[in-house]
Length: 159
Image 1 (spheres, one colour):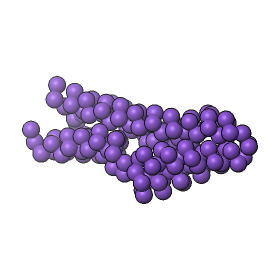
Image 2 (cartoon, one colour):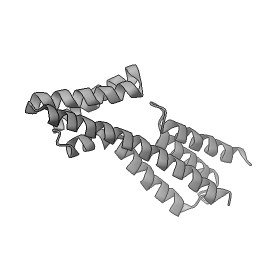
Image 3 (tube, rainbow, N blue to C red):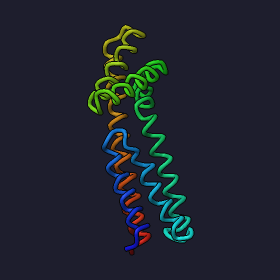
């Protein structure tokens, strides 16, 4: 094994780890590994079709990561305002308390905004639950994408 392959592998493994560890950019690390190896091989391996598909999957995963909670809160009947507030509060909580704090903060922020907006306890609780489910689904999607990129890279380069 050559060092560019090992570097790509380390970045791809870091991507998988980053999909479950907050503040570690999982998908960008995975894509960096693929792009670096592709560049090192003179744009030969793993091949343009794989790089294009990996990029499209990566873009979809990044969009899902940033929009998952907001989209699911909206699907649960929440307002744009609750999605914005929950996004800001969730980011601050992630940086200060970690992922569990972020989940709790998003749930509470979404609930509080929707309760204040509609005066309906059940609506606020339902919207908060949708927001948390969206965040968790986004994390699972990140893990699936980074794992798929790792396996695909190995299949395209080793086998």
